[in-house]
Image 1: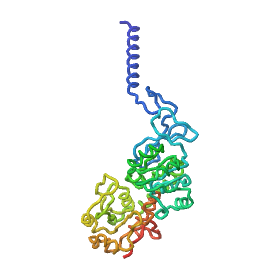
Image 2: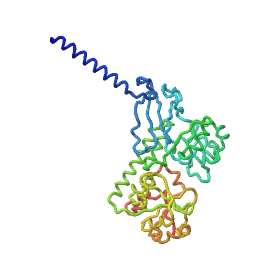
Image 3: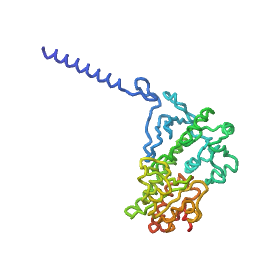
Image 4: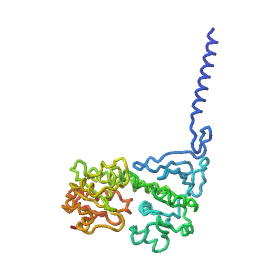
Length: 387
């Protein structure tokens, strides 16, 4: 075979291999919303993911073209946030659309009222549930409820759906545990709903980052980022100040239905005690899970008897005025070190409505744990229970 024929054979083989490789790669191309069957990008494709979300794991956002955002909420549901003057992009036919910024929201948890506080969008709230002026601790909500611009539509267990329908909310924010009982009803009424799951986060700053989640619906990400950076700086400062110190042993629990309810080792509260420089007695109790669990009085006492500090994180209105009153509920705790030394600290009534202030709460805890290191710091979110 002469040299010319050899070159022709080689060229033919190279061309064939290259064609095979191209076809093989094309066959493996994954199509996504916004792509046609060949994987070719259409007008609105993912441009970028939000890399500013550092700690939250229960939501996500991807930025598309033309100001459109593809959001994954706390129930792993996809939502398209489209500017009011914009249109829904092609390729996302099965994904619900919410026009932004929203002007008429229904908040189905008092948690949501604190998550929107840094955004200053209270005028967008048309209705609330499980919140009334008597137990509410957010002035901006209370004032609007008194004036009538925010309507109370009932408890989540007995909502006034006729009233909700008449208020015509653009979106209803619900928590993850209410999806089963509220989600289907809102769908029936034609009201888009969004699931907020900040309580399932394992890091307090992750829970605070749900401020960013709420900001997506108002196009106020810049405001949220600035606020969250301040919180990050506070937590970093506290961590540096308590680093290398001898950690006080800290216990926490509330009495409920004849047992103690404690925060699990994987909860954001457990992480708060750790960041503040405390050694939480239940840090190894189901450390891979968030939320709370119930244990017997005897189990709580055995684990907490030598704790230096007792933190009572009460919900609602019920809080101890004296240590004696608290001990009467569970006499077994009377001889605990923290009780004997008068180191029982209770959360203030507004504590549960201060998700946007977890950085302040961490600093309060650090001041309780290390009073000598935080001289001059005024503890705001807790009070020392009188003997």
